[in-house]
Image (cartoon, rainbow, N blue to C red; front, side, top):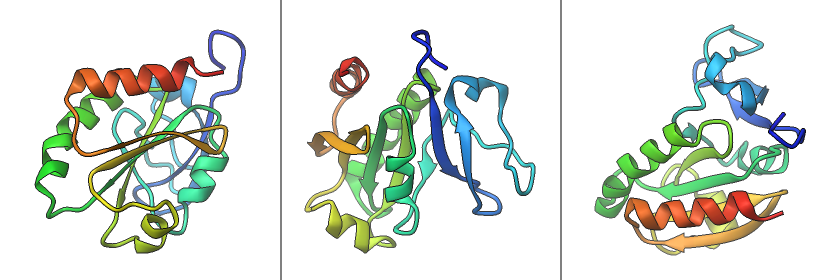
Length: 152
């Protein structure tokens, strides 16, 4: 639960066994474990999502979900990665940070109209609330994230 008593559940895939898990984001610092393999699910870094689970992660997360649509070969994506990682560490438990490789997951990239990378899309309550195309410096990313957490 957050400070207001609202639920803070998120749906994430275990990076080891690929089982989807419902995790209490407010307890992220306690290092939750996978219900299937008992290995840690770390929410202080971006979580990988795929065509198979992105919609479910967005729909079943009580906190904002920010998706970094990227590709390994993309220069601006490489520039953005450490900024995104740092934001995930700083906002653990209040925003779920995810990454979707657009080369390996073209279905979701098409569904969400990704035409340039990196593209950051913020979802809240299962719907898109903000989009940023192109790499941004940390202050600009923080403004986007602040708006996402302040929207009712």
